Length: 210
Picture 1 (tube, helix red, strand yellow):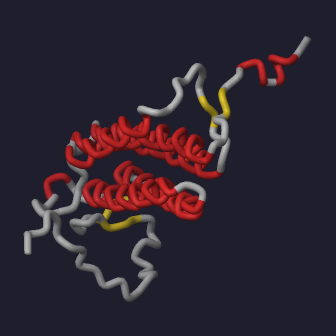
Picture 2 (cartoon, one colour; picture 1 turned 135 degrees about the vertical axis):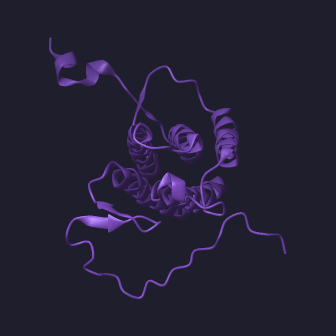
């Protein structure tokens, strides 16, 4: 049996609350306690928030698989992304000098996979003549929400990188993932045969004034 790339989790979550965080601090993977409003916590906390949004989009894709077989494939991809985001969170939740060789992380292989999927799904999409707004179908809006949260996670991780060493692949992964969410949101509308909502500046109240 081939050796696993990363070490399996060693957890025993028998108690959900411990009261140890009641003073506004929490513990990193390597054991150091830091304030809960530290930028490091904000970084992996936002990645965790993104993971929740991805889970919602995945659920919608599974529901829509009856209308489009390809939706099942997207759902599988989104599950993989959830695992990758947890791998990313593992690194962000650890002090740089305490990261272990077998500790889960995102790598160039994860980024290359996203790029391949972006190129494949984008190849058959209509060229955009305007920016798009979230809409058209539920999955489209959920994937746009994922994109927006992913961009926020990227900004926070970049800010963190000015304070401590952050693996370059962590930032590159979030950047590419936000692009993937954008392409997947457009692709979802195409698969379901619904029109995307294009930005039309004159649709605003000020644009309709005579």
